[in-house]
Amino acid sequence: VSHNGSGGGRNSILHNAAVMTHSYLNAGTTNDSFLRDYLDWMKKASNWAKFSATASLGVVHAGHITEAMNLLQPYLPDAPPEDENEA
Image 1: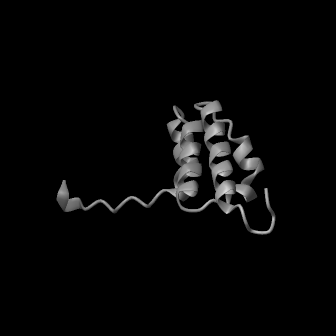
Image 2: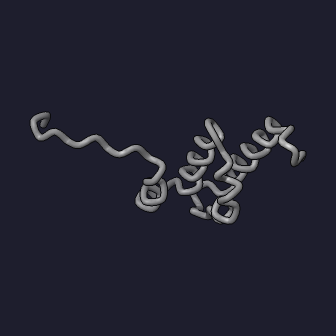
């Protein structure tokens, strides 16, 4: 992999492949140590790669709703306020 800025497309593909492989291999286990160990590398993700990385956290924490929601809260939009008149 080149360090001079070229090969960006290839790096993106490898990044996505590593993230998706990790999510499939650890689906439902809550073992997200790979993502935590390489957090600086994960922060380089943008656009769809960032979406995929966030979604992979959901796959790893599948079946553990409360824990997953706590972990994903920083990445999720705020819920709209409930209007008392719409009930």
